[in-house]
Length: 89
Figure 1 (cartoon, rainbow, N blue to C red):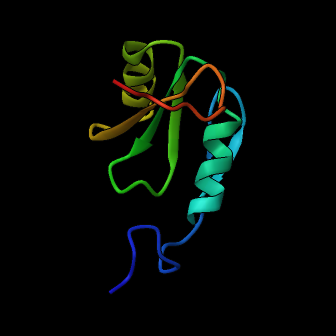
Figure 2: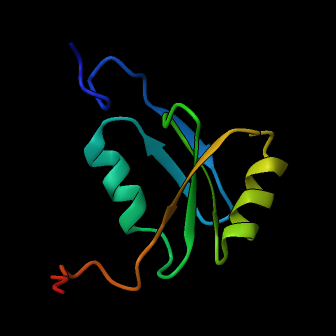
């Protein structure tokens, strides 16, 4: 059984207003997320094979992705920085 981000997917490039991003295997997807502007949202296609849009807000990312013709999305919140955090109660 292949993992969700297995090698079976083809890489595709997508032109966004910030850059052309190759999305495919997990390391490339992580790179796309780390290059995203902080405190924003990244919109991926429903099958997670390509990055569709970035937005400063959730609504902005959704609108930009819909303008690109994507109806079903996976949205990921980009943190202000990528430092590790420990949450305790």
